[in-house]
Image 1 (cartoon, rainbow, N blue to C red):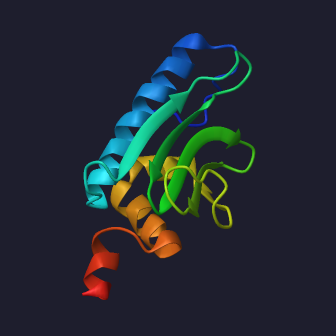
Image 2: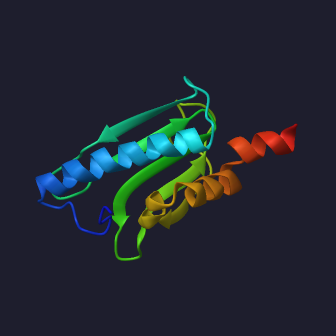
Image 3: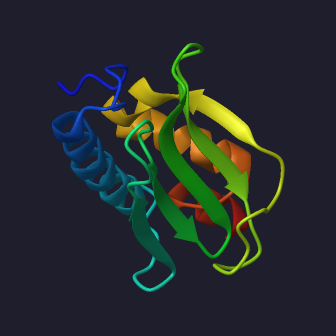
Length: 126
């Protein structure tokens, strides 16, 4: 199990593991949400030595970013709506715990509740 709360600051190995693991979990999240290929991208910004940087899943209607920006609160996943993949400001920010990356179905449920994208949202629209 990955320790999401272990700081990446000044720890290159931890930062590398953080980015690899977060990227993998966001790929699983995209699959859980049944996002169509080409409707999203996953990108990584390693940033400077003193921070974790962030890993982002940017969908045409949702922006999900993982970073250690809220370690003291346990938060570290930003979820918000957006209007296309050029929109990086989007709707209101919603923060959830980094540890939700260890429970992809629960994280997917949170994403659906906030953004109305994904498998359940498509069923409601039908």
